[in-house]
Image 1 (spheres, rainbow, N blue to C red):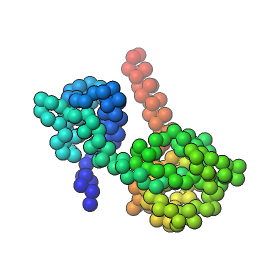
Image 2: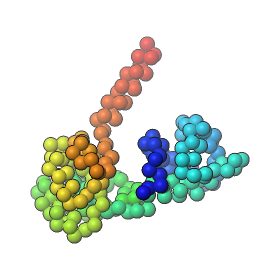
Image 3: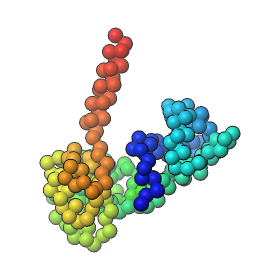
Image 4: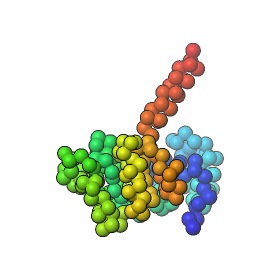
Length: 215
């Protein structure tokens, strides 16, 4: 049983942001910071920061603040960034290639071990020094390699069949760009959905709302 299983989703979602800001402070040579100073940099209240971090134990000292490197490492441990989960990527199109090339997998708890596509023109080409394999080889690859997670960068209409194949291979962890709701059909999986269009529409709403406030 995970010792942090009762932590709320909003707190968990803020942890990567803490990790990123603390990493930037480390790069600048900052060794100590108070919750008030951290709140000013992150746009959160000092009280919110203390409440969030207290969920995982006492990291700060009154009158001293937080040791930046120690807190950075502790949050990395909480997030599990040292695990190197073996991960495959399905879909070597523009989105899949961008994800493969630009994500710092090794620094974020994962190791990209295979890339698959059914486009014959892509098979055999290399992305991030990994040769794209034929999707027909998926089962053999997963049976011969310990695959922990899959990234889906495929069209929504292709996702159900691929998800069924992955699930039958025992893969239960997904980073899902496909817009296909995996959790409806598979309720025992861990999935993080990425909806870029949704994010863009939320930005549109916020801009519209801001302009209306100015009228």
